[in-house]
Length: 230
Ligand SMILES: Cc1ncc(COP(=O)(O)OP(=O)(O)O)c(N)n1
Ligand SMILES: Cc1nc(C(=O)O)sc1CCOP(=O)(O)O
Ligand SMILES: [Mg+2]
Image 1 (cartoon, rainbow, N blue to C red):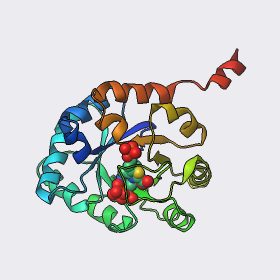
Image 2 (image 1 turned 180 degrees about the vertical axis):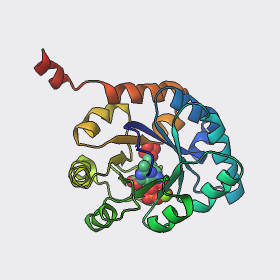
Image 3 (image 1 turned 90 degrees about the vertical axis):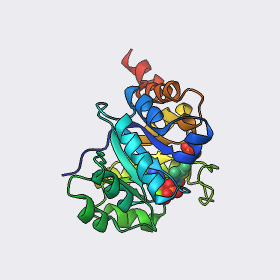
């Protein structure tokens, strides 16, 4: 059985964005996890495979003892290579053009955490009937320079619609794309299980403080609920 996806803040640690901001990936991952981020995904669209593996190993080291899950973007081979170097890697986040989730599951094991990006109705339908998929990534909520190939923003309404279908199918949704701490309330109200960011943490001068703000915003009680409770 797969490890359950942690609710709340989900960090996609993009290597290029992190290094451009002058941060070390292991430090950013550790600071984020110590402030309550439950999942860290390593994303490296431009790195050579060896550098990607090294970054995953470094992030795994940073996450030691924090309890946060570590997921690799796209590359099952990189996840396996990092494991073979002794790193604890929990799973992968797959795109629509990556290895099928069933193959990733066969390679990574029954307890691996496997996410799949799905925002278009057909992709969502397929993802929700695929037993190898643990959670869905839905985006981009807003257009973002971090993912220039995603040219259509899906908006919060899509997050709400997919979250409702996914809840009925017992799968959590992670909203992503152009988001920050200020969006936590609306993302949560839309029914998402988690909110994923790259720039809001990796490009921030103080990634730990940015992660803490995200975590706090997610768990902040909705003001209208507080008003009702009083
Ligand atoms: C949590 C989460 N959701 C969506 C994505 C996007 O994945 P993908 O479609 O494979 O695009 P790239 O990130 O690989 O450009 C994600 N990485 N994480
Ligand atoms: C990695 C990724 N996936 C997306 C999707 O829409 O599936 S958007 C995205 C980048 C998110 O970066 P930022 O928080 O800097 O906007
Ligand atoms: Mg991907």
